[in-house]
Length: 115
Length: 119
Image (cartoon, rainbow over all chains, first blue to last red; front, top):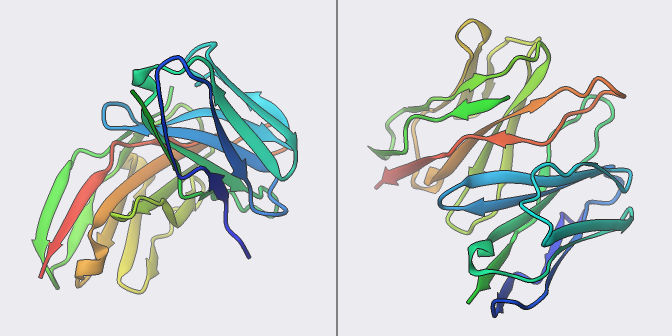
């Protein structure tokens, strides 16, 4: 089975530009999570969805960040406008939380550089 | 609030030595889940193990073993006879149990321990 797919793998953009990160979860998984990894803050949860509905977005840094999940197989994380401090690796993860299986499987990440 | 502490920032050992990575957590929840993930130099996050708070049995998987002690809020990870391929950053993580419908919340990660296995 295919794992979590993220695109693009690398993104370099200039400050002020809009950035859209994409994620395709593992088929059949009902939870989807977005995380960010930086040297200073480590790995932190941004937002997660259950059955396409946002459940907890308390980790989203500010209004410049937004996330959507229009269907069970696709989610986006958008930053508008982007700033240099948004430079990080953004991970998407999914899990299937029935039958006591709560582990999250991560995508390869998108390395974002904002200049 | 939940918190995970991995006090060892970096550990360096020679191949074939045993090594233990420490993890201490804080939570007010009575039901929760603990995880270990591996991040090799290539950058992906690889799931290693999940433990439920109500199951304190230790677990062994090949050269890997985990010691969960609720009394000390610790979930330590031991690699026996380490190999160069074990070199990676290892993260301990914690999530809450969701009362509504069950399931686990998002992960709270520790800062990670960078394990270096020298040949």
